[in-house]
Length: 484
View (cartoon, rainbow, N blue to C red):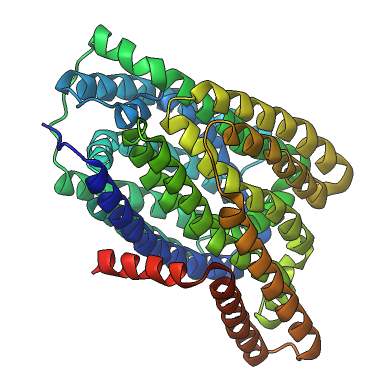
């Protein structure tokens, strides 16, 4: 039987979940960013771009391993039944095994089309195996998310990430190139599977309940269609760009996207993961939903905006100060352009997450169609004419279209945009002007860079406290109490 969650319990578990996932994210992103730095030193832009390209191709295929049943289980108001769990597991395994067979058959075609090396072909096989291992974790993950038990859910993710990056960085340092990713992917897949079932045991079973499947597909199919559009928009376009820009161009674009999206991975993903099941449980409480959504957007923007702006300003200095990092200078303009998309994603992702949670899946479906069409029209066209920077400009224009999503979401729920967006934007702008002027005056050195970053943090913190007041301290006190 599932635990009955009251509004107070949902609030408490949501805050604890955000704290747990925030802690996890800081650990994982710290590991990932340090590892990425070393990888971009040890690997050439072509090798880095090849991994990014192959991963995008597999992620595109991976969409077809699910039809939204896992999301339907999480979103479901009533308690889950054994038949629903077993039916979801059975359908998913049929899809995954079929998909892996297709990948294996098409791998020679993929290799020839992108002129991939033999090592890259082995990486395709490793990612296919990893896809199967990941599918076996779905039901235990759903159970933990339904219980809002994110303290356990984060453990496999932490161990997987540490093992993956430890292996890949060590092997890249030893000169194994693409083979480093192949071994690391397999280590990550097997370790995560074992730990997940240790923390949340579930006896695998097979069933095909037509009644359960029909109920789950009502939400699952539209949800998965949205997921397909997101995959088609992002990973699908990367596969196309591989034939336009080549591995070198994709490597530059991957570097820019990696760092531009880092603030979202640090500060947004954990909030989205927790608030989706929480919003689902609060569907009949519009006032509580309004407050929760406003606070979610505020805290995401509170951290994303200054981090993103600071990164854009100090990135040129980083490529000059860090040894062997000057090779990434051609991607600096792309970093700034793609950051426009990141800025709007910090706002629109919580909004589409909210719409999904309350069952407005058709609205997010139309929005995803709009973003997908714009991406597939603008990004390839501009990349053909202007190369890597053209592709980045295409992403920036797509980001600007998110204003439509903000307008639509505001019709369904009241959002205090001045609190959620206005105050973080003003504080971040003041910080940005300060560190930009400071950089002009100071010499390019590690000491100057550290001083600039520290001063920027202090300026931003002071500006936010001036704009928001004592309430921001009270919020952080609550977070610390839940952390304890």
